[in-house]
Image (cartoon, rainbow over all chains, first blue to last red; front, side, top):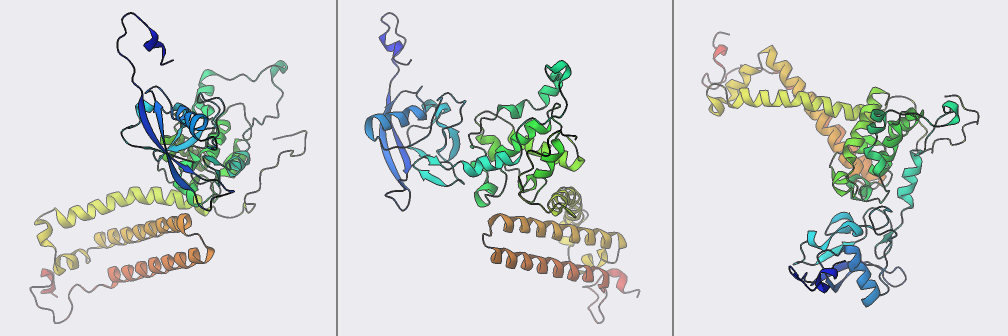
Amino acid sequence: MSSATIDQKPAVPEEIKSFTVTLIIRRFNPEVDDEPHWQDFDVQLYPTDRVLDALHKIKWEQDGSLTFRRSCAHGICGSDAMRINGRNRLACKTLMKDLDITKPIYVEAIKGLPLEKDLIVDMEPFFDSFRAVQPFLMNSVTPVKGKERIQTVAQRARFDDTTKCILCAACTSSCPVFWTDGQYFGPAAIVNAHRFIFDSRDENAAVRLDILNDKEGVWRCRTTFNCTDACPRGIQVTQAISEVKQAIMRGKA
Amino acid sequence: MTSTIEAPRSPYTRSTKKSGVNWEKWGWIYMRVSGVVLVVLIFGHLFVNLMIGEGVSALNFAFVAGKLTNPFWMVWDVIMLWLALIHGGNGMRTLVNDYATSRISRGILKVAILVSVVSLIVLGTLVVFTFDPCPAGAPADLVASFCKSL
């Protein structure tokens, strides 16, 4: 941890200084407020601290009513996607040293999904789209000798990028088409469809391509690359969507 | 696909009408194809009009009239007109779909786009094919040189 260097007696290179950071958080309590409002907090932090640590400090030391989701706090569960300085990021993967701390840090809930409280949104519409693309392996053939379905390294690599999705909704809630039209499947659903469409073990790529070849499907994508920029897992989301478009045009994966 | 269980997980029915032409798909393909063609047509048009020969100073009624008597440029201009107007109209349609919230405003805007695209295409096509490069009684210095021989 950051305090370890300070405790060391011999040859201390330099003390890691803490600094005061101002966070401006968009608060909303549905029981009291009609409209969300901004509230600022001053927190003492180290450069190696994350936005999530700042939120914890506020919740534990200043205002216990601050509400946000987080589970693993290590960038895998996908619970704490939020809009930090206007960009969708995971609070647990955004370090203070990567932000301009001379200015206040603005933190708000992700956009395009119904706001429930403070930094929490209703994720149900997002998961509805996810369910709609049938994100599970569909195969009618019994595996050889009842063991496993063999796949070459190249076949696995074909959809490797889209297996990395953690369903944090950072991409879908950064998409300007999704902001204006909640009917659009959104990048995350298409990424998870891509993961099975290009899986050699799956047999129902055509079904998913049909689902996405819809008025609210892949054709609504305007290739603005907001989703690729927002993805905390570095998935090439826009490329995945384009590959699905190509597959629909050719009629097969 | 053969299945032992009768369709246990039927597709989530977002839209069941799976008949006829998929306009969203063909609209998207049209945008890509016409975009590529328009790059060639528009830059060729600009190059010929603004850079070749005397450049922009050559542009006058006679220059345009001369171009519009040449079948090559008539076809070029008509293709450019149709592709560009439908391309632009379709782009506006997607914008309306994205940003017009109510059914009524969406309908009004789309009809307005359709009407303006159709009327501009008709007018433009009419001009290209019925254009008279040598209007009667026009001063000789304003019309194309070949008008004298008529």
